[in-house]
Image 1 (tube, rainbow, N blue to C red):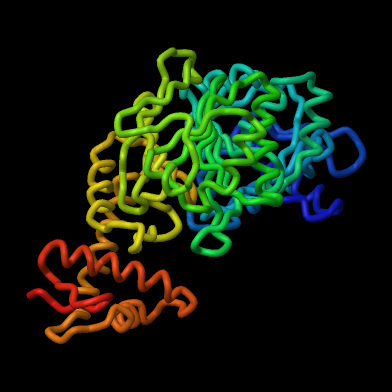
Image 2 (image 1 turned 180 degrees about the vertical axis):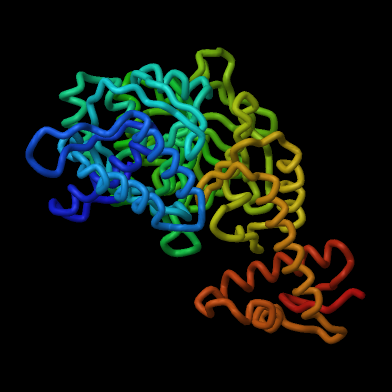
Length: 458
């Protein structure tokens, strides 16, 4: 994997980058004499010494160490890298919801050379067939990055010639591609544009399950994002997988924009908390309450009895549900948390006291991966929860200190507390301020005096 191919001329240079990475990580060095005439190749000992020096220098402060060590070795032996054996495979770009993004080009090399793994960037390595690699990934014996999973799945499903054709035709950009992000076995993320409170912030639809799967929070409205979502589901159905249900964490528009379209197209039941059904003015095929299970059949490692457990977690929304997967220790958090923004809790509709209680509840879970409604999944659930609670408490105290013995209007308090916030978000900041004030009133630290007017209670 190397950087993107900017043009046909740039591909040769990137092939050189790929060969340097290949040598560093596996010891396989593809090179050729620079000039005519028969020349003696460098000894295996000399090649191994070059690689050790490369790894040692690359671990130091010199950012050009890799280039210097390898180029000096090639110059001393009158060699150049042989880029011709590499064939272009595909190019994939990290989805826009990621904090760190990569634009990666992949090449194919047919070789009978055996890799030699030594201490450096890698701690181990082995040869796998695509099927064996995916089976090990599904058992969680090995970790594979999402782009590599996409490539291996194509290589597994059809003859090599057909797979290469399909991989070469893949759209590099995730957005609009009709592909999900295979973040973990049984969890396919679809960060799609929806009508979020923060413009341009994708909302995550999630396909959870293996041969049997559910669609969680189909948020996009009409347009390319919905087409992407539908194509991703149909891709799974085309493999022979079965869509069992549409599942909602809550009723907000950025999580439900495609509910009716998907319900009609795929003819599957809709599952949500009864309050969510009421707020959407729609009939649910199954009402979910705290402790209910959504059966998923066999997990990716082949074990039966896999399920999601519904957790009633109100606060952000009155009917909010999170879903915990005990087998993989995964939590679908909906809008309890985000890895890109502080979650909105506003009144009317939200309840700050219940929200903090919901956060306290999920903090006690043995979560290894948390899937938020907005932003990339995280392996640091407790840290994320603690940061959110700390931020929320700081805001509550800021609202409290804005109160005085004289009655103050909500609008005046919100303007002071959110003085550094975009004025276009005034409606939202007033609602979050109201939620904080109601929280303070419930705890006797403030008192309501008429409509949207408050005074300090202490």
